[in-house]
Image (cartoon, rainbow, N blue to C red):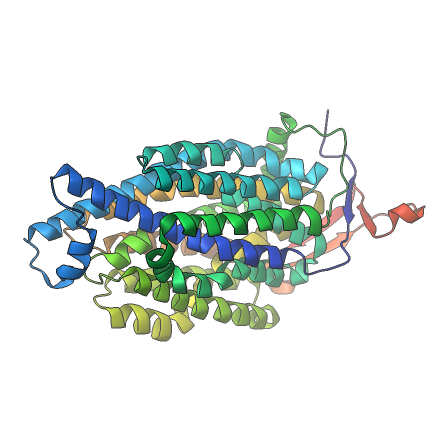
Length: 501
């Protein structure tokens, strides 16, 4: 039987910059895929409903011949568009649930398993699942199959662990190779690498669809996904010495998750973890608004074209990403992690309140991205990576896979909760306020900020002395023997740590 007390060894890679190129390449593939998926679903639902009502292909007719944003609210075309928006949001809901439910169980095992056999065992399965999903889209588009075939592929993809599982492997990898003092910046940079390609990849997505169609656009995405898998297999060195006796399906994994929150003799740490996980859960739920931004931008009163949606995504991500990296670098010199997280939560709240009342293209582009973004959006992107850092710094080196496995499980729960809450709200409030759902999201960020405030107040005296640091006392170890042990850093299971987060 495996136990938490077994030896844990870290093999330091020769290169520090290993995952960032992979994440950038992955994002260059993922962002177009997300937009392609949302736009294809929206167009398919639109054409299916048009056929249902005995109408011609209405997509070109509504978007070009009629100016939907300047039509009377009682016009039949407006009612038709509202029904399309509602139906598309429900399709996104079902697809997300189909993938997230099996991924929940996989993430529980992969996190702790990666502590035993290596981080690549958590990174690769979601990448392979993504390839399966893209292949399914190619088949559905080519053969004009119903959308429900995509639900099957999403379910199969979920057994690979979904995006959250890949990220748990990446963040655990970073934690293996960084000190607590530099971890927040490296985790933030890694998350920003997810966003950097989003600045450029959406720019040509509308033109790409018009030129080569959906199927060949998905084929290009598939080629990129295969390249990412090849990079991980051959160019990402492992950081964890493999335990050949480790088993994937082992009930010990569940016990490790329980012990994460019930560690004997360290009640203060246990309470801190519970508060941080609660803040993480509440604050990340609004991030899983799958497809709602695209639907909102194409809906009244904005009515953006596919090309303009791409321009908006690029502008917003460009300001938020580069600003976020700069702020993260500056804040590590003058501000503790918990304060940065609190500012990020409050900034996200203000940003969503603003978006709820956007009325025209100038407001969405120049208001949110130029005036509001430097003050609020730049800080909002720091919320999640900073809370991840606080969680990582609270546990031992040998628990990094477990804690990020718990984070991945929580993210998948959030994806289910997010689409279950926000997609139906968006669909049912079309006749009230199209941006009403963003007010609900702002409420979540307000509650998350309150939880973080409790965390800061409760541990204020501890944080003042040396915020965000961990002192490690490692008993004397036997010298390393043999050339094969070079580059390995062994962590004694009996090491004691004084946490000061």
